[in-house]
Image (cartoon, rainbow, N blue to C red; front, side, top):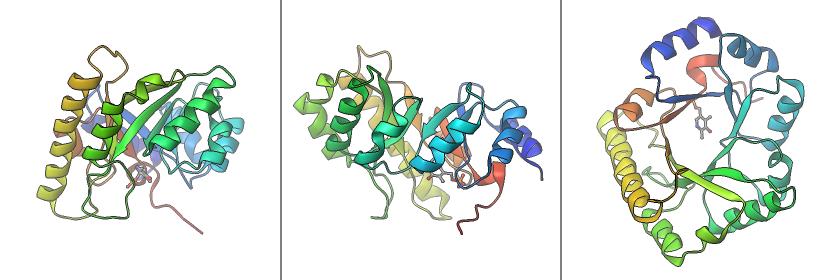
Length: 223
Ligand SMILES: *Cc1c(COP(=O)(O)O)cnc(C)c1O
């Protein structure tokens, strides 16, 4: 299958109100351009250096999303151009993003990552942790951050019921957080969940953003 035909197939399965983030990490700029020429404009990367060099080399109307684990000392490199940071998983990181964004006078869009999987390898706030942070009121003091919603990754398992349960749980939490803490906030609208293997379930359960790599670009070569 070619990149354009993979995209056409995905587009036929993804409703128009759900954004497709083409996860291009570990893939070459030429491959990104194939997706770009097929009409895609949102691309997701997980390494700061790789993201910055692709930003330099590729069309400027691409919206770059950072989907990896962000180290505080690298925030400043992506702040000038990043459209959305998906995986913010600590108050400390939020503080640092706010500080780095204040310098050039930017406002950075962020999603808070929630730990929903039954694995301890995945990052994220627990529901209780995030509720505590929101209760403290501290997030509201960050002038240079827009909290645009939540992000989560399901357990890596073939058990569809398990995956569906986790997405359902995240959607329930999203609705609760939105109505309790972000009712007057017109940014808090995105629920980023679903990857190549589980995006259809995620969309059924209320995802507004699917992050899809392998089903577009094929397997990644990590060497
Ligand atoms: C790599 C990655 C994806 C894409 O995964 P695929 O299975 O290739 O679709 C999505 N989200 C995050 C956070 C990732 O790191």
